[in-house]
Length: 203
Length: 203
Image 1 (cartoon, rainbow over the protein chains, first blue to last red):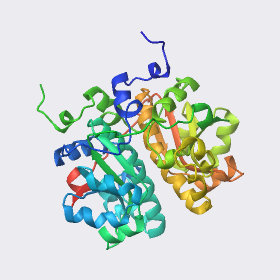
Image 2: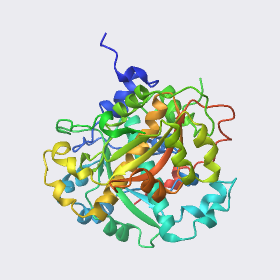
Image 3: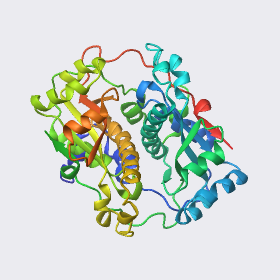
Image 4: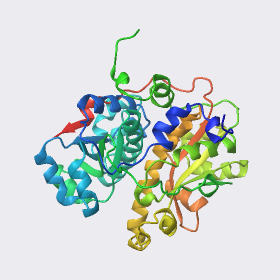
């Protein structure tokens, strides 16, 4: 028996804690094993219950399945991310639907007028980015819940990817995500994390 | 035995899926049972392993423990959120550290020059908000992992809270969070969620 730690204060069991956070790592290499559409749907079926402002759920996930689609992405990826983006079994563009408010009468039925509060596009785009980014947090946890490794990449030309894949301006690219089973030498040593004493302030 | 569903495609067990997502709800009322600093530290000790850009970890969590601190918050909270903010056992301001780059030589040691790439404050603030929002996604999952209910509130004057609690401009308030055990009539019926067919696009 190991000594009790903060992990014992959680309701979530240790194996799940490890799967989702403690043992999970950002993968830089992947095996050839594919990631299926059924796996992606299963991940979304789980994480769609995470909360968003107005229940607006603005996250959209564009899977680049064809070689042609992936080729279109590569010029916008930073050089240090290009090799893994070219070799990952699945690459996705994670984006925010700036016009998420159109669905609010259905998604937020007790206040259907919320759609009209969000008429101003710049303010709405900020809301869309915020809630979609929260959902990306849930999604990264969900990828790990599926037993897969996630490789989020912020090093890319987001405006270029938005123009390339979403030319009508409705979606804004926020993050690229490689998904698969970790390959050889998939990661370096774990980088340091801040302690709760450094992060949690009290008044 | 129930029929197999997408839940069976996940490595995470059903009880954990329910705890974190399927059965978890945004609470609007809470019991009097306190949330301890040890519980908050345990949640952070779990979710701090979630990935952030440059491993920058810009999320800061300000706990409003005193009555005076909570009183200072209430004028900035929308009228529909005021009663629950006044009664929740724990209220936190979730914020982004715009000067997170100062720690990068320690947190991202293989590229210490990243600190200098982030010299421009507006671009850095956007990075800080993005990664801190990802971390808020992890944090909401972590609150649930502790067996607690989270009540995130986007309906507040973020600029006002930033001025009130972070007058030196280093931190930007992003979200308010009530935490506790769900009270009586803590939630209405679950709001509808988008299907993966609506969210996942393929090229």
